[in-house]
Amino acid sequence: MLKRALLVLALATVAQRSASPSFPLEEATAAQLQDWMSSGRYTSRQLTEMYLRRIEELDRLGPTLQSVIEVNGDALSIADALDAERKTKGARGPLHGVPILIKENIDTGDLMLTTAGSLALEGTRPSKDAFLVERLRAAGVVILGKTNLSEWANFRSTHSSSGWSGRGGQVKNPYVLDRNPCGSSSGTGAAIAANFAAVGVGTETDGSIVCPSGANGLVGIKPTVGLVSRTGVIPISHTQDSAGPMARTVADAALLLGAMVGEDPADAATKGSARHVPSGGSYADALKPDALKGARIGIARKQYFGYSDAADTIANQAIADMKAAGAEIVDPADIPTASQLDACEMEILLYEFKADLNTYLALRGPTARVRSLADLIAFNEKEKAREMPYFGQELFLRADKKGPLTTPAYVAARAKCRLLARDQGIDFVLKKYRLDAIVAPTGSPAWTTDLVNGDHFTGASSTPAAVAGYPSIAVPAGQAFGLPVGISFIGTAWSEPKLIGLAYAYEQATKHRRPPAFTEHADR
Image (tube, rainbow, N blue to C red; front, top):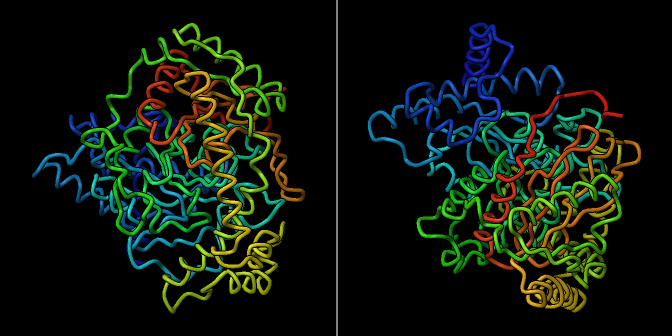
């Protein structure tokens, strides 16, 4: 409590010091922050203070985005320690002293909670950091706090509102406040778009990094499953789950990804992943502004065009821009199995959610009020007024009826989905047309948030890469009605360096990222 009181006092002091309505760190990249700290223009503590003040002014007050579910009471002391270390030993690397935000379903062994947005896990904390958090702390970041999310990473109800959690309320889209930020990494998307930190971490099972990145004008990298450890991340599916960076630039996203990767003995999927990471763990060499020149880009039109006129217009312009940058466009280059993935994917997720969540909850210790999915269902019913005021837990109930992972129906669904998404899907198209990547609109402009009826979701392109466990990168491609729209670069397993290069070349040729305006309603 003392640390939190001191943090509030420090923020009040900073607020009194500043009379300028402008934010000096607006759109600042991690590299710029590092340069400013190296030159002595700012200390890490000063950067941390400024970001915390902005969170107070815009997330708690002002537009009340509700994107940050909790600030880190240790943030200022961590920044002080890193400033002292810089003076005596120098910087650890390019993220030394840089403030970041992480999604609230990622364990931290500190004062902050990890609840996946649910009231059921309040009052108990993980005993240690998630593996990826250990990696980030070793890189010297300052974790400012944790971001709000779609509760249980949007795997509770079939008609949920993305960005709503019992603990954090409804996240708003900073571009147009009555619009949805998309989920489940909605808080990270809104917060980084609003310049509450330099970069942030999200997680994805299907669309939860790339969709909020597209809806909030960000770059989001959903890595190959196994590139980033999932140990200490509240799970949905060990087949599809992955954590990844969300940032305002491709360079910042690549920088954060490099700090997160690493083989983790506790996550079997990461075994051997080191051979797919560039030497030194840095993706900097992939940032080539001419990477599109001569690259073969396939356009996945069937199923991923036609649900939004605005998204189609922006994606078609992006195709023309890539061609002007020297890319060879193969149009169409459709994924033939695209329409066949949903059923087997849901079957996999229902089985794995029950098994993986039960394993995770058992590790939370005897003080946790829920130790299984069945306990969680009972808690939600008991606390229905607080936990289920807008939508229910239909997916929880369906998952709880599933048997073990040896059940033939699960084994068959997993084999079928992998075949459809990989051999007969992404890899088939890449090989058939000799492509470097597949491109499609990430999603539509953000829909109006509707807590009564749930999401008005029209379409997106995240599922093939999600089911395959392959990488995809969302990049800003323009705006419609004041709302961002992105395109996604999709590739085969471990193709992150190639995709980063293509995304960077497109970003540098177009530079569509715009900061949010915090307007009340979309342009007419």
